[in-house]
Length: 147
Length: 85
Image 1 (spheres, rainbow over the protein chains, first blue to last red):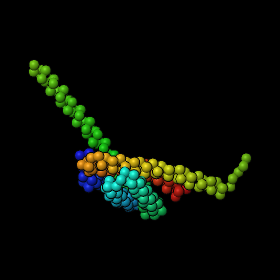
Image 2: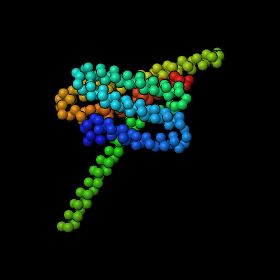
Image 3: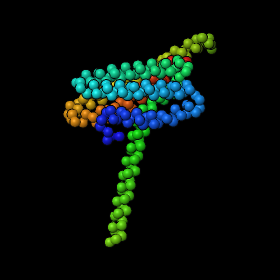
Image 4: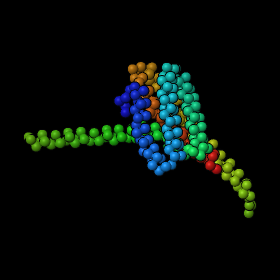
């Protein structure tokens, strides 16, 4: 995850993984015939995708500003994004053809993916380290046995 | 013992739910302040090492994406309190 230095590549990678994980809830919605859940989830997912894109643009713009101005800019943009989230959730709550909880889960999917990705990277790193230690130990033992 | 009419009890419950929603929204302020602070530090880092710009943007993007979660949790709770009760 930390190897990717290009923001656009990172964005595409996050979205790819998010959509890959999203196949499960979408398949559940299709198989069970709960179209409110399916629609709500897709609604949340689309909004979270667009907000991710907006965030990348905002971050890139903020890095060209002075420190205090960037702070204010990002804070203001956060509250605009927060308002968008509020409108989306309120629409999902008031519209009977959208499931509110599914919309909330759709909004959280990118965050879940990032956390899962980090966790998997951590576990993979830990396992690789242990494997290398084990290999080194084994080599040392064979060397000692040979002598 | 004082007995309240059902209308009064309903009104108290509604008022308490709206008050709770208001308190829940306080949690939305924290991530905003945190993200702003992170942005300021990112600008400082880019000024110090312009070559690390890409790395800083990706790290900041991931951090901001996760930091926002707590704000949305509070928003979900507030909306449930406002529209359900």
